[in-house]
Amino acid sequence: MSNSKSNLGSELSVNEIQSLMEQGQDSLARLTLQLNRQFSAMAAQRYAALGYAGLTPVHTFLMANLDMNGTRIVTIAERMGTTKQFTGRLVQELESHHYLQVKSDPKDRRASVVKATNAGWHFFADACAIKNEIEAEYSALVGTDQMAIFTSVLEKLAGYNPQNADVSDFPGPEVQV
Image (cartoon, rainbow, N blue to C red; front, side, top):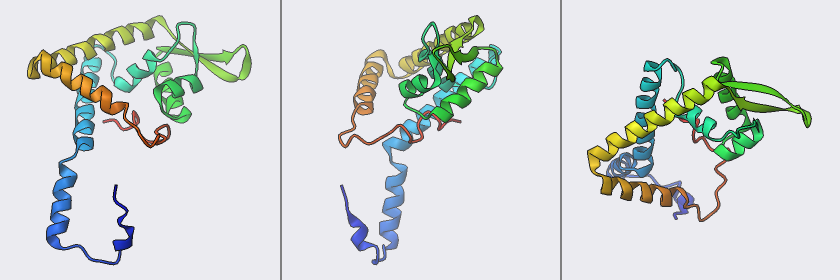
């Protein structure tokens, strides 16, 4: 890791800047963001074709973090690794489509409990089928062995956080097309 703030007074040459620009384009972060955006766009297009216009894989991820009998927004946010505010916005979007119901928590009236409706579970089933279709297309493109290796590598990299950086407030699922 570099601590080059001591060099702030020196000027970089044109070649150094061009080299940095090339490095910025050749980035694992850029590729994973591009893959996420493409996957999200493909899924959203297919959702819309089934009547779920305006919904994305992030909505699907929220649905995957619900309990059958309802879940508090703060719990959903923790499970998703995102903020309560962002989770609340997703809940409102899904509620406006009648895929979720939001009621006061009987144990604590200040809190809300989110529960999927029958229509919400149908959206989730369709979204999971679409996810499986897209992943099958990727597998056909690169081969099942390569896809298994790719998935394994992504899982390992996604779990790598040696400095225990707090990712809860960092834009993650919020970064969408």
